[in-house]
Image (cartoon, rainbow, N blue to C red; front, side, top):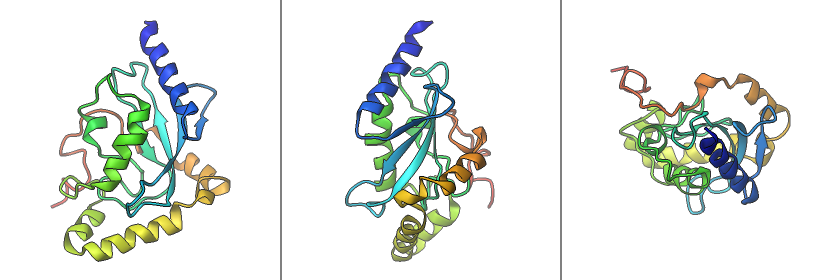
Length: 186
């Protein structure tokens, strides 16, 4: 079926022609890294992250897998793996969406409006609910330490690539309560 592959190619090219730096992996359009900047007027403003994107063969009918390669402090992003808990990607994906939506709408919305009641990072969710000022300071500290342009280029980024595996990023399937960090431990 050539339709999904044409759509995938078109969406990746559209992303490449936008303001995003796209770095293909393995000479194909199924896996690539995207340079993502924190949204303006947010705690993440000024931060730069390398986001790994993997497109399944059935894209756009099946959602992309998305994961942050450098650390980010957020209730809905697993601190160790970078996987993202975002309903629109993991559960309610539609072929009407494209990669531009992911980077211009879905990820900025995730950073602007964290959901501590459905966490992948239980510590961040707990801190956000208990002490918002301290949470805000920790987000800014992580941005300062891990989300600078130099963190996504050179040696440190290469080490992050080597540490990342297919299991480390969202896989586009619905997560049961057993699969989601923060739900299993009482």
